[in-house]
Image (cartoon, one colour):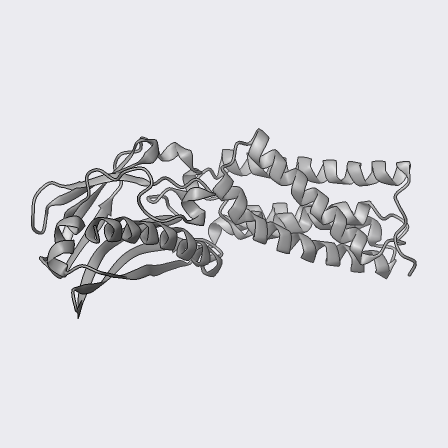
Length: 324
C-alpha cells in the first residue's frame, strides 16, 4: 500500500468531523453515566476500555471511506482523538490531573486496539461495512446498560516502604507518636506530591497513649483525618485504623480517588521498628487498602506509586528529625 499522503482539505474535514462526532458520543456517555449511575458508571469496564476503543474505531473508520489509508493513519486519528478527549476532560469537565493521568494508559491502549479493529474492518470491504461505523459506537453504549448488573471484584493490598535510620528505637518512638509541626522543605522529593500535586503532611498529634487513642493527621488543602490506634507496643510498633469522617479539603481530587470512596478505601496503617545495632533502626511504614474496580491489577500499580511516594516522604521527615 502507498504511504499516507498529506490529507486534502476535504479529507481533513472528514477527520475533524469524525473526531467531533466521537467526542460528542463520549461526552454524551459521560453525562449519561453521571446522571443515571453517579456512584458506579465512570469506574466501569465499558467506560474505561470499551468506550475509548469504540470511539477510536469509529473515528478511524469514518475518516477512511475509500479504504486507502495505512494503519498509521488510524493510529494518528486515535491519538488526535485522545488528545481532544483529555483536553475536554480537563478544561470542560474539570477532571483532576491525577484522574486524567490514570486514564491515559487505558484510553491510549484501548484506542490503539480500536484503531486496529477499524483498519481491519475497512480492509474486508464487504457489503455490511456501512453498518460497522454505527455498531462501533453502539456496542460500548449497550455494554454500559448491562454492566451494572455484574458485581465488581474486590482486592486488598498493602504498600510498604522501609528506611535505615541512624537512631535508636527509643529516639524514634516519640516521633512515631506524632510530629505536630512538619516544616516546609522537610521530607523527600517525589513524583506524586511534587509533580502531581498530592498534598503533603503538615503535622500529626496523638490524643492519648495506648489502644483507642487517636492520631489526628493534618495535611495541605485543609485535609484532616483520624488514625484510631489498634496496635500499641512502645519502642516497637504502632498501628491504626483510618477514619475519614471530615470531608473538608478532599475536593482537590476526583471523588472516585478519595481514600474513603466506594472504589478505593484506605483501611489501616502503621510503623514498626527493627533494631539493627550500632544505634541504627530499620523503620518500616505500611498502608493497607481495599480496591473495587474492573481493573484492580492496573489500579494497584498506581496505589504502589502514590502510597509508596507518600510513605517515602514520611520516612524522610522522620529520618531528618531523628538524625539531627
